[in-house]
Amino acid sequence: MKVHLDCFPCFLRQSIISLRLGTKDEALQKRILKNILPEIQNADLSRPPAYATTFIHRKIRQLLGRDPFKEIKSEYNKVALGLYPSLKSIVEKSPDPLWTGARLAIAGNVIDFGIFTSIDIEGAINRALNNPLAVNDYSTFKDVVSKVSRILYLVDNAGEIVFDRLLIEALVSAGKKVIVAVKGSPVINDATAEDALEIGLSEVCEIIDNGSDAVGTILKWTSSPFQEAFRESQLVISKGQGNFETLTGCEKKIFFLFQSKCDVVSKELGLSIGSMLLKKS
Image 1 (cartoon, one colour):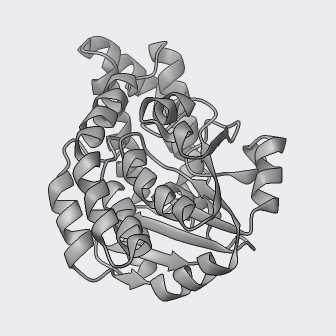
Image 2 (cartoon, rainbow, N blue to C red):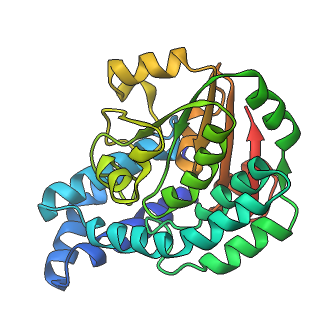
């Protein structure tokens, strides 16, 4: 994945979303936007878009003096927790809890306020459970899961991690050791250790952070402990489009679970926007 011409308006739109969440002061919004235009202008076209968005959001947080997504992250953790009991019941009653947990984890990827200003969680759940996936490598996924004992699970967004919990619980119930990796510090609405604790994930599995504030997982920017966990894992489950951008092509057994949310990624995959994928590396 490399930066495409169509990424530039998206960089700008994501910046505006972030600024409007971070402050109601329109003069400050405009001042910061002008200050981050050089980051957009100087985006490295040879790298995945996640590199540029990392620099952009790092500067936005610096100039705002705060994390603009903090409140909405907590809000959607609570929204998703409200859905958890009924979704958990669906998984438990399923003839294949792993299948249902995976589908719901993909549905949860719709919770992304770095890209969207509104979301339809119920619609995403219905599509994930009842419609075919655009890319469906589930049979291979199930087979690989049955043969491994140690899984590294890379979560994506706050709120979404409640849906991840459903799949993680299914994996743990199947006797798997699951280690969940969150971001080392805030970036967009990506999940951090604070979010994992808020939704009770630490009661289910081990939580580590990747030591990074990068969008996706840029391995060279992560901590040594995370890199060791990545190397030692027998299987990596990767959530979200940012992780797909930064880890696709990596020589590791990875399954990508996400929704294709932009023209560039969708065209790269030959799919329509909004497609749901469970894709092997």
